[in-house]
Amino acid sequence: MGAILKAMVLTTIGSPLEFEERPEPVPGAGQIRVRVEACGVCRTDLHVVDGELPNPKLPLVPGHEIVGIVEALGESVATLALGTRVGVPWLGHTDGTCPYCRNGEENLCDEARFTGYQIDGGYAQYTVADARYAFKLPEVYSDAEAAPLLCAGLIGYRSLKLAGDPHRLGIYGFGAAAHIIAQVARAQSREVYAFTQQGDRQAQDFALSLGAVWVGGSDATPPQALDAAIIFAPVGALVPAALRAVRKGGVVVCGGIHMSDIPSFPYDILWEERVLRSVANLTRADAREFLALAPKLSVKTSVTPMPLAAANEALERLRRGELTGAAVLIATPGA
Ligand SMILES: [Zn+2]
Ligand SMILES: [Zn+2]
Image 1: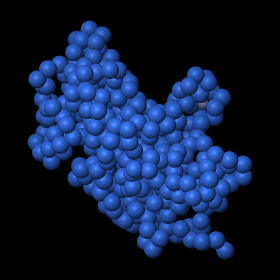
Image 2 (image 1 turned 180 degrees about the horizontal axis):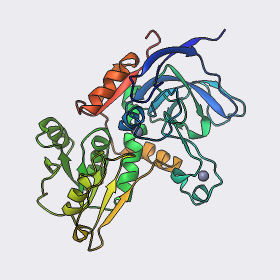
Image 3 (image 1 turned 90 degrees about the vertical axis):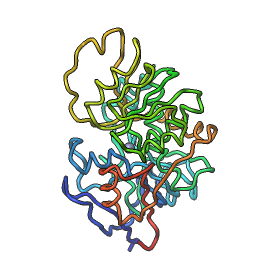
Protein backbone atom coordinates (compact mmCIF):
# COMPACT_ATOMS: atom_id res chain seq x y z
CA MET A 1 0.00 0.00 0.00
CA GLY A 2 1.77 3.12 -1.21
CA ALA A 3 1.42 6.58 0.24
CA ILE A 4 -1.27 8.96 -0.96
CA LEU A 5 -0.50 12.25 -2.65
CA LYS A 6 -2.62 15.32 -3.03
CA ALA A 7 -3.00 16.96 -6.42
CA MET A 8 -5.04 19.64 -8.16
CA VAL A 9 -6.47 18.03 -11.27
CA LEU A 10 -8.11 19.30 -14.47
CA THR A 11 -10.82 16.83 -15.44
CA THR A 12 -12.93 18.97 -17.78
CA ILE A 13 -11.75 21.87 -19.94
CA GLY A 14 -13.04 25.17 -18.60
CA SER A 15 -13.86 23.81 -15.14
CA PRO A 16 -11.99 24.58 -11.93
CA LEU A 17 -9.25 22.18 -10.88
CA GLU A 18 -10.39 19.50 -8.44
CA PHE A 19 -8.56 18.48 -5.30
CA GLU A 20 -7.76 14.76 -5.53
CA GLU A 21 -5.91 12.10 -3.62
CA ARG A 22 -3.93 9.63 -5.73
CA PRO A 23 -1.46 6.83 -5.12
CA GLU A 24 2.12 8.01 -5.03
CA PRO A 25 3.61 7.68 -8.54
CA VAL A 26 6.25 5.05 -9.23
CA PRO A 27 9.05 6.18 -11.55
CA GLY A 28 9.56 4.02 -14.64
CA ALA A 29 12.85 3.37 -16.40
CA GLY A 30 14.75 6.61 -16.90
CA GLN A 31 12.41 8.52 -14.61
CA ILE A 32 12.68 10.18 -11.21
CA ARG A 33 10.01 10.77 -8.59
CA VAL A 34 10.19 14.34 -7.34
CA ARG A 35 8.72 15.54 -4.05
CA VAL A 36 7.36 18.90 -5.16
CA GLU A 37 8.42 21.78 -2.91
CA ALA A 38 7.10 24.58 -5.13
CA CYS A 39 5.41 24.97 -8.53
CA GLY A 40 5.04 28.24 -10.36
CA VAL A 41 1.76 29.28 -11.97
CA CYS A 42 2.28 30.24 -15.61
CA ARG A 43 -0.06 31.88 -18.10
CA THR A 44 0.25 28.74 -20.21
CA ASP A 45 -1.56 26.88 -17.40
CA LEU A 46 -4.49 29.24 -17.96
CA HIS A 47 -4.41 28.55 -21.71
CA VAL A 48 -4.51 24.80 -20.96
CA VAL A 49 -7.34 25.06 -18.43
CA ASP A 50 -9.33 27.32 -20.77
CA GLY A 51 -8.94 24.94 -23.72
CA GLU A 52 -6.90 27.35 -25.83
CA LEU A 53 -4.24 24.67 -26.46
CA PRO A 54 -5.38 21.55 -28.33
CA ASN A 55 -5.66 18.05 -26.88
CA PRO A 56 -4.28 18.21 -23.34
CA LYS A 57 -4.00 14.92 -21.46
CA LEU A 58 -7.16 14.54 -19.34
CA PRO A 59 -7.37 14.22 -16.44
CA LEU A 60 -4.29 16.40 -16.06
CA VAL A 61 -2.16 17.76 -13.25
CA PRO A 62 -1.03 21.17 -14.61
CA GLY A 63 2.18 22.95 -13.71
CA HIS A 64 5.55 23.16 -15.44
CA GLU A 65 7.69 25.29 -13.15
CA ILE A 66 8.44 22.50 -10.71
CA VAL A 67 11.02 22.64 -7.93
CA GLY A 68 11.49 19.53 -5.83
CA ILE A 69 13.70 16.86 -4.35
CA VAL A 70 14.56 13.59 -6.11
CA GLU A 71 13.02 10.94 -3.88
CA ALA A 72 13.10 7.79 -6.00
CA LEU A 73 14.99 6.66 -9.07
CA GLY A 74 13.67 4.47 -11.84
CA GLU A 75 15.87 1.94 -13.56
CA SER A 76 19.01 3.20 -15.28
CA VAL A 77 19.00 6.75 -13.93
CA ALA A 78 22.67 7.57 -13.43
CA THR A 79 22.74 11.35 -13.77
CA LEU A 80 20.81 12.40 -10.66
CA ALA A 81 21.25 11.21 -7.09
CA LEU A 82 18.58 10.80 -4.43
CA GLY A 83 18.15 14.02 -2.45
CA THR A 84 19.18 16.32 -5.32
CA ARG A 85 17.09 19.47 -5.74
CA VAL A 86 15.91 19.72 -9.33
CA GLY A 87 13.74 21.86 -11.57
CA VAL A 88 11.35 20.30 -14.08
CA PRO A 89 10.38 22.64 -16.95
CA TRP A 90 7.86 22.65 -19.81
CA LEU A 91 9.92 20.48 -22.20
CA GLY A 92 9.34 16.96 -20.90
CA HIS A 93 10.21 14.67 -23.79
CA THR A 94 11.71 14.72 -27.28
CA ASP A 95 12.42 11.84 -29.66
CA GLY A 96 16.03 12.80 -30.40
CA THR A 97 15.67 11.52 -33.96
CA CYS A 98 13.46 13.91 -35.94
CA PRO A 99 15.06 16.48 -38.28
CA TYR A 100 14.60 19.25 -35.67
CA CYS A 101 16.25 17.29 -32.86
CA ARG A 102 19.13 16.33 -35.15
CA ASN A 103 19.56 20.00 -36.00
CA GLY A 104 19.80 21.19 -32.36
CA GLU A 105 16.20 22.48 -32.40
CA GLU A 106 14.61 20.06 -29.94
CA ASN A 107 12.20 22.82 -28.90
CA LEU A 108 10.50 22.15 -32.27
CA CYS A 109 10.61 18.33 -32.02
CA ASP A 110 7.84 16.59 -33.98
CA GLU A 111 7.20 14.23 -31.06
CA ALA A 112 7.81 16.66 -28.17
CA ARG A 113 5.71 16.29 -25.05
CA PHE A 114 5.27 18.95 -22.43
CA THR A 115 5.00 18.96 -18.65
CA GLY A 116 1.62 19.97 -17.25
CA TYR A 117 0.04 19.53 -20.72
CA GLN A 118 0.70 16.05 -22.10
CA ILE A 119 2.54 14.83 -18.98
CA ASP A 120 1.24 15.30 -15.42
CA GLY A 121 2.93 18.32 -13.85
CA GLY A 122 3.63 19.93 -10.52
CA TYR A 123 0.31 21.05 -9.00
CA ALA A 124 0.78 18.11 -6.63
CA GLN A 125 2.86 16.84 -3.76
CA TYR A 126 4.77 14.47 -6.06
CA THR A 127 5.47 14.18 -9.75
CA VAL A 128 7.39 11.86 -12.04
CA ALA A 129 9.75 13.23 -14.68
CA ASP A 130 12.21 11.96 -17.28
CA ALA A 131 15.60 12.43 -15.60
CA ARG A 132 17.10 13.80 -18.83
CA TYR A 133 14.77 16.81 -18.70
CA ALA A 134 15.34 17.78 -15.04
CA PHE A 135 17.97 20.27 -14.00
CA LYS A 136 19.96 21.00 -10.86
CA LEU A 137 19.10 24.47 -9.59
CA PRO A 138 21.35 27.29 -8.36
CA GLU A 139 21.65 27.21 -4.57
CA VAL A 140 21.06 30.92 -4.05
CA TYR A 141 17.34 30.64 -4.81
CA SER A 142 14.79 29.30 -2.35
CA ASP A 143 12.35 26.72 -3.71
CA ALA A 144 9.66 29.35 -4.33
CA GLU A 145 12.12 31.83 -5.82
CA ALA A 146 13.52 29.23 -8.22
CA ALA A 147 10.13 28.17 -9.62
CA PRO A 148 9.52 31.11 -12.01
CA LEU A 149 12.99 30.65 -13.50
CA LEU A 150 11.78 27.39 -15.05
CA CYS A 151 9.39 28.87 -17.60
CA ALA A 152 9.06 32.63 -17.22
CA GLY A 153 12.85 32.70 -16.97
CA LEU A 154 13.78 30.07 -19.55
CA ILE A 155 11.35 30.98 -22.29
CA GLY A 156 11.76 34.67 -21.51
CA TYR A 157 15.49 34.21 -21.95
CA ARG A 158 15.03 32.42 -25.27
CA SER A 159 12.79 35.32 -26.37
CA LEU A 160 15.51 37.79 -25.41
CA LYS A 161 18.15 35.87 -27.38
CA LEU A 162 15.91 35.83 -30.45
CA ALA A 163 15.46 39.60 -30.15
CA GLY A 164 19.08 39.96 -31.33
CA ASP A 165 21.36 42.41 -29.56
CA PRO A 166 19.09 45.39 -28.92
CA HIS A 167 20.21 48.49 -27.05
CA ARG A 168 16.63 49.71 -26.69
CA LEU A 169 14.36 46.79 -25.77
CA GLY A 170 10.59 47.12 -25.43
CA ILE A 171 8.66 44.64 -23.26
CA TYR A 172 4.88 44.39 -23.68
CA GLY A 173 3.12 42.90 -20.64
CA PHE A 174 4.99 43.19 -17.38
CA GLY A 175 4.32 39.92 -15.56
CA ALA A 176 6.44 36.98 -14.47
CA ALA A 177 8.58 36.64 -17.61
CA ALA A 178 9.08 40.38 -18.03
CA HIS A 179 10.22 40.93 -14.47
CA ILE A 180 13.00 38.37 -14.92
CA ILE A 181 14.02 39.37 -18.43
CA ALA A 182 14.11 43.08 -17.58
CA GLN A 183 16.80 42.28 -14.99
CA VAL A 184 18.79 40.20 -17.48
CA ALA A 185 18.54 42.99 -20.06
CA ARG A 186 19.63 45.63 -17.53
CA ALA A 187 22.60 43.47 -16.49
CA GLN A 188 23.55 43.33 -20.18
CA SER A 189 23.44 47.17 -20.33
CA ARG A 190 20.27 47.31 -22.44
CA GLU A 191 17.64 50.00 -21.95
CA VAL A 192 14.22 48.58 -21.03
CA TYR A 193 10.98 50.23 -22.16
CA ALA A 194 8.01 48.67 -20.37
CA PHE A 195 4.52 48.71 -21.89
CA THR A 196 1.62 47.79 -19.58
CA GLN A 197 -2.13 47.96 -19.71
CA GLN A 198 -3.29 51.55 -19.83
CA GLY A 199 -2.98 53.13 -16.38
CA ASP A 200 -1.63 50.04 -14.60
CA ARG A 201 0.43 52.09 -12.14
CA GLN A 202 1.36 49.04 -10.08
CA ALA A 203 2.96 47.22 -13.03
CA GLN A 204 4.62 50.43 -14.19
CA ASP A 205 6.12 51.12 -10.76
CA PHE A 206 7.29 47.50 -10.64
CA ALA A 207 9.01 47.94 -14.03
CA LEU A 208 10.68 51.17 -12.88
CA SER A 209 11.89 49.46 -9.69
CA LEU A 210 13.59 46.86 -11.91
CA GLY A 211 15.44 49.50 -13.92
CA ALA A 212 13.12 50.32 -16.84
CA VAL A 213 14.08 53.73 -18.31
CA TRP A 214 10.54 54.39 -19.54
CA VAL A 215 7.05 53.05 -18.87
CA GLY A 216 3.81 53.63 -20.73
CA GLY A 217 0.51 52.18 -21.86
CA SER A 218 0.57 49.52 -24.54
CA ASP A 219 -0.49 51.93 -27.30
CA ALA A 220 1.99 54.65 -26.30
CA THR A 221 4.82 55.70 -28.59
CA PRO A 222 8.20 55.40 -26.89
CA PRO A 223 10.42 58.52 -26.92
CA GLN A 224 12.87 56.79 -29.27
CA ALA A 225 12.35 53.98 -31.76
CA LEU A 226 13.18 50.58 -30.24
CA ASP A 227 15.71 48.11 -31.60
CA ALA A 228 13.53 45.19 -30.57
CA ALA A 229 10.38 44.38 -28.62
CA ILE A 230 9.18 41.23 -26.87
CA ILE A 231 5.43 40.70 -26.44
CA PHE A 232 4.65 38.58 -23.37
CA ALA A 233 0.97 39.58 -23.10
CA PRO A 234 -1.33 37.18 -25.04
CA VAL A 235 -2.88 40.05 -27.00
CA GLY A 236 -2.64 40.01 -30.79
CA ALA A 237 -3.41 43.73 -31.07
CA LEU A 238 0.01 44.39 -29.55
CA VAL A 239 1.73 43.05 -32.68
CA PRO A 240 1.01 46.08 -34.89
CA ALA A 241 1.66 48.36 -31.89
CA ALA A 242 5.09 46.82 -31.38
CA LEU A 243 5.90 46.91 -35.10
CA ARG A 244 5.16 50.64 -35.04
CA ALA A 245 7.48 51.09 -32.05
CA VAL A 246 10.57 49.43 -33.57
CA ARG A 247 13.07 51.05 -35.95
CA LYS A 248 13.90 49.90 -39.47
CA GLY A 249 15.35 46.39 -39.23
CA GLY A 250 13.92 46.00 -35.72
CA VAL A 251 12.68 42.68 -34.35
CA VAL A 252 9.34 41.90 -32.68
CA VAL A 253 9.26 38.61 -30.75
CA CYS A 254 6.00 37.01 -29.62
CA GLY A 255 6.99 35.17 -26.44
CA GLY A 256 3.76 33.37 -25.59
CA ILE A 257 2.32 30.02 -26.65
CA HIS A 258 -1.11 31.49 -27.41
CA MET A 259 -2.32 34.91 -28.51
CA SER A 260 -5.65 36.38 -29.51
CA ASP A 261 -5.93 36.98 -33.26
CA ILE A 262 -3.63 39.60 -34.74
CA PRO A 263 -5.62 42.38 -36.45
CA SER A 264 -4.72 43.15 -40.05
CA PHE A 265 -2.19 45.93 -40.43
CA PRO A 266 -0.65 47.94 -43.27
CA TYR A 267 2.42 46.43 -44.87
CA ASP A 268 4.42 49.58 -44.30
CA ILE A 269 4.82 48.88 -40.57
CA LEU A 270 6.58 45.60 -41.42
CA TRP A 271 8.39 47.04 -44.45
CA GLU A 272 12.02 48.18 -44.14
CA GLU A 273 13.18 44.79 -42.93
CA ARG A 274 11.35 44.70 -39.63
CA VAL A 275 11.14 41.10 -38.44
CA LEU A 276 8.18 39.48 -36.70
CA ARG A 277 8.70 36.07 -35.12
CA SER A 278 7.47 33.74 -32.40
CA VAL A 279 9.29 31.70 -29.78
CA ALA A 280 8.33 28.09 -29.13
CA ASN A 281 9.24 26.13 -26.01
CA LEU A 282 12.84 25.69 -24.92
CA THR A 283 15.82 23.44 -25.45
CA ARG A 284 17.78 21.79 -22.66
CA ALA A 285 20.73 23.93 -23.75
CA ASP A 286 18.60 27.06 -23.06
CA ALA A 287 17.88 25.70 -19.58
CA ARG A 288 21.50 24.97 -18.72
CA GLU A 289 22.62 28.35 -20.07
CA PHE A 290 19.98 30.41 -18.27
CA LEU A 291 20.17 28.56 -14.94
CA ALA A 292 23.93 29.25 -14.89
CA LEU A 293 23.48 32.88 -15.95
CA ALA A 294 20.67 33.98 -13.60
CA PRO A 295 22.68 33.84 -10.34
CA LYS A 296 25.72 35.43 -12.03
CA LEU A 297 23.57 38.40 -13.06
CA SER A 298 21.98 38.48 -9.57
CA VAL A 299 18.52 38.01 -11.08
CA LYS A 300 15.92 38.06 -8.31
CA THR A 301 12.38 36.74 -8.62
CA SER A 302 9.33 38.29 -7.01
CA VAL A 303 6.93 35.57 -5.89
CA THR A 304 3.58 35.26 -4.16
CA PRO A 305 3.52 31.88 -2.36
CA MET A 306 0.09 30.24 -2.08
CA PRO A 307 -0.96 26.82 -0.80
CA LEU A 308 -1.46 24.06 -3.39
CA ALA A 309 -5.17 23.89 -2.58
CA ALA A 310 -5.49 27.55 -3.68
CA ALA A 311 -4.46 26.76 -7.28
CA ASN A 312 -7.80 27.93 -8.72
CA GLU A 313 -7.50 31.25 -6.89
CA ALA A 314 -3.92 31.65 -8.16
CA LEU A 315 -5.10 31.09 -11.75
CA GLU A 316 -7.93 33.61 -11.33
CA ARG A 317 -5.58 36.24 -9.90
CA LEU A 318 -3.26 35.70 -12.87
CA ARG A 319 -6.20 36.01 -15.27
CA ARG A 320 -7.26 39.29 -13.67
CA GLY A 321 -3.72 40.69 -13.74
CA GLU A 322 -3.64 40.98 -9.97
CA LEU A 323 -0.20 39.46 -9.44
CA THR A 324 3.08 41.33 -9.24
CA GLY A 325 5.72 38.84 -10.32
CA ALA A 326 4.67 35.18 -10.11
CA ALA A 327 2.32 33.04 -8.02
CA VAL A 328 3.98 29.90 -6.68
CA LEU A 329 2.07 26.96 -5.20
CA ILE A 330 3.57 25.39 -2.12
CA ALA A 331 2.65 21.78 -1.42
CA THR A 332 3.20 21.32 2.28
CA PRO A 333 3.06 17.71 3.53
CA GLY A 334 -0.19 18.40 5.40
CA ALA A 335 -2.26 20.23 2.77
ZN1 LIG B 1 12.56 15.38 -32.33
ZN1 LIG C 1 5.07 28.49 -18.75
